[in-house]
Amino acid sequence: MRKLTLELIPSPALRKLQKPIFKHIESFELLEMLKFDFEMGTRIGLMKVKVKEGYSIKEVELPYGSQILSVLKEESDKHVCVVKIQVPEDFKNILKEFDLNLIWTTPLIINQDKRVYSCIGENESIKIFVELIKKYGAVINISFQKAAYREHDILSVLTEKQREIIIAANKYGYYDYPKKINSQQLSQKVKLSKPTLIQHLRKAEGRIMANIFTGY
Image (cartoon, rainbow, N blue to C red):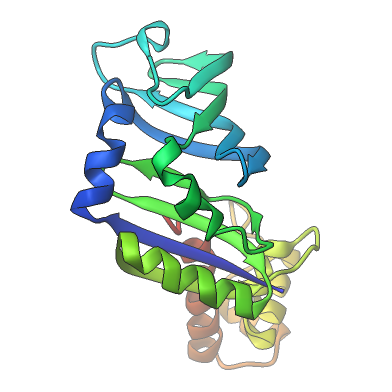
């Protein structure tokens, strides 16, 4: 199993289709998928909804039978909501193409200018999804990683050496404030030269940050 994260710039046709959705809304961000019914063309999810300036969440009306079922939390222009997205009848057959036994996960972000999709599945299903999605826009960024289910899953993007060193750095207090150990002392602990240590740390930190901010 692998996790795919993909950024798509919508085609003009997709922009035209989604335009009514963004009359009052700036963006949707999936927090958790609750239901995805390919047959009925229905998605229900826990989403963070960002409303455009000058509008309130109460004014939002979604087209095609879609609706905000419940507003759970409000913070300025951002609202955590249970949202039902209904695909127009004409597009249900298109949606069924994407019934590929994939697990839809985060980040999943939709706005007027960009869509970020994330899913977990077998290699063959992911390849089919990537080819299908290219029909609806330009793929500008794509990443694959092993699907891992560990408490420290974020470290799965690192090489074995990077993982070993960044764990040691955390253990010995390199990331504490104030630091309990400097880079020279840490290099002696892990038996590497200071330049090599710093190179490994910078690459590890870069990979972790890139993974966290994929799609943002």
